[in-house]
Image (cartoon, rainbow, N blue to C red; front, top):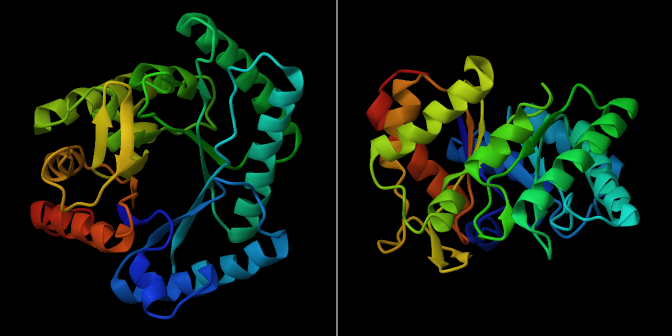
Length: 287
């Protein structure tokens, strides 16, 4: 079953008087959404006990919860202490994710820094291997790690790079952020065929099971020569990308991803819009 929801809470959530993620599951359920991504972008400050309380509510309202690991992660770094910190951010995120009852942990892989890209990516792969060993050793082999395609040119996270990482181990399922891809490629995604080329790459590289169940981030994003600048809302009619052609391909391939809106302040509303677009195309398929 395909699932839709927001990454973080919309402005409307707070405008309606809510203030805690504890209230999010009921809010989403009442809207007709069934997924949510909790961000640890600025650090894993949430206590494990509180994460478990949130998890009870997510379970009660049948909301699939994922988390986004801290943005500080950089597996292209050559400093062993900083790599150890990056691995620690992953472990800390997984600990809280498990307490919430979720499975999927999204993370940014790396940035080039001063290295040539090929060398930076080589370093990234070696350090991700180190991370994998620690993840399994720490008892998180039943979780899912979701490396994300990135929107800035100097970030590690092209379609091909993420697929290479996801072929390393069964624990990986990719996060395809189509707003990021569109930003990086300066407006590449326009037609269903443009999306189809990418989806076909996923199926060829990872096989049917992984490909059908990818993690998706979607929003319209302003971009420039260096790629991503800022997230927009679905009302934007300048930058794109549009969701309709992606929905066509998701339906055609009978895919069942988790689709998270990362719109700027209207995440829940735009997740609902994407859900409507999808089911207008799919009818009862995958309902």
